[in-house]
Image (cartoon, rainbow, N blue to C red):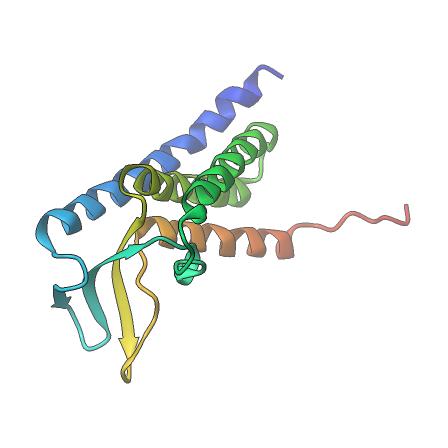
Amino acid sequence: MPDQGRNALVWLWLSALVLVLDQITKLAVIERMTAYVDVIVITGFFNLVHVHNTGAAFSLFADQPGWQRGFFVGVAAIASVVILYLLRKTQGRRLFSIALALILGGAIGNVIDRILYGHVIDFLDLHAGGWHWPAFNVADSAITVGAAMLIWDGMRSPKIDETA
């Protein structure tokens, strides 16, 4: 159907919005904060920091010798192509499409960091009782919300009867 490509484009504005917000916030952190030194206390449970993450989510593989940069760029590139394909092929599943668009924008935002800097800029620091959640960013937030929405969509979607 010729309409499928155009309908996929409707959701790309959300990916672009996530990407722009992610990059603007990261540039602000780079310009205003020294990495691993500055901490701006916002509340008793939330700080702004400037952290470089060479690993994946929650700094997984950050201690590796460097192979992860190319690997994560490649994984994100493949995931982006798959997401674009799914957006193009999926019609009428609003929640599913929003989730994919959020994940796409976040993935591209973090890939840009890996290509430009060799690491991802993280700056949101949640903490309680001396315990800190790994620092994260707007892209990570979009990916997490998108993944939760995919799970929710999968749980609420009607199941196909395989016995029929």
